[in-house]
Image (cartoon, rainbow, N blue to C red; front, side, top):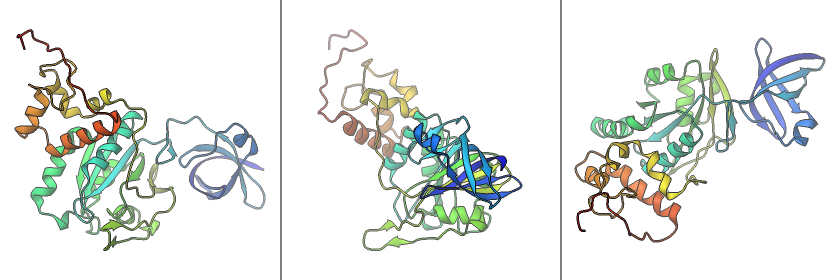
Length: 304
């Protein structure tokens, strides 16, 4: 048997399609010892493998991972690209914010793509982009079906392994086809009954779009649960709050109903986007699961 090093690009039913430079795709099974160690292979894993005379492969070892995401389940990611539609389906700030939090907890930089710019006016697209520039490594506005629209995005992906994610129907498959026509991804539309995207990607798969450049397509999602985050930590995931929170009257201000809250004042004067603040409040209520009791000691002894 010949030995090689490769990268897992797809896994279905215990078979793992593994890309080997100079050889192409080898369909492999995982060696039993990997199941015994409870370290099942993930899409994106760098592995050593052997190939027999029939061309069938066996994964012998999973090489050390740089990281491993839970949702989507993929390893060795350099960055994430979250795609949102400006319209059809309507943009959901809370869903994007959840994804940003999940990726920040795993130290994965995020690119944001607002797609379907042809369905909205330029001012709306720019407003959304300006809200999130402080929250991401890059923000892009595209019409994926238009030639050349993803050229800037392609530059941001070059030389990296990027996981592509977002709700169903926002145009992820169209973006994938624009970046890598050979992917030939099925493009879905919207269910007119519920105005949600139709799921076209059914499993996670890694595509090589250029030399040393991989894009991982994942099934769409409509909700994300935030585990292991306390309500008091939540504000740390909203970077635009940072320059104001130190000015709040209370040192442990949670920016909800406390008097003289500098964050809420910034929302009222438009310095912080109301969409982001409303999303923060919804997530705070979800994480706390209880009514908020306000009993605070002010920073300044002013007799109040």
